Image (cartoon, rainbow, N blue to C red; front, side, top):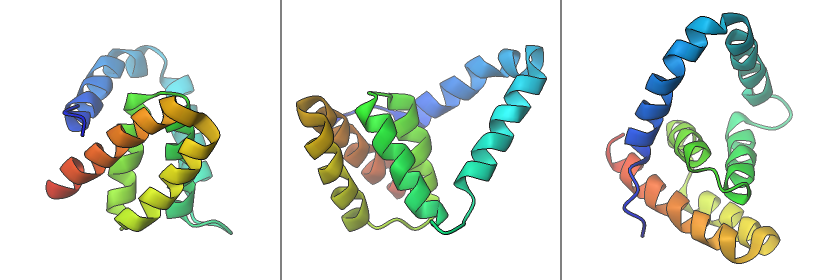
Length: 116
C-alpha cells in the first residue's frame, strides 16, 4: 500500500487555495455551491455520488481528489466492500494506471478511516 499522506495533502491544498479563495471569492463560492448541489441526496444518494466522484478522480489520476472524496465517503459510512466494488470498475475502465490509483485509494481509506 501507498504511504501517501492524504490528510496532509488535503490540508496543503486548502492552505494553498486560501489566498485564491480571497482573490476570487465569487468563482470559489460558485464552485462550492456547485459541489454542494451536485453531491446532495437525490435519486442517487450522496454516498453513490461520492463513489462516482472518486472513480473520476482515480481515472484522472488526481491524488487530491482521492483524499477529499475518501474523506467524504468515510463520513458517509461507505463500507470497504462498496469501495472495492467501485474500484474494480475503475480498473476495468482505466487499466493499469487506474489500478495504481486504486491502491492509493485503498490506502487512504484505511489510514483516514483509522483517524475518524
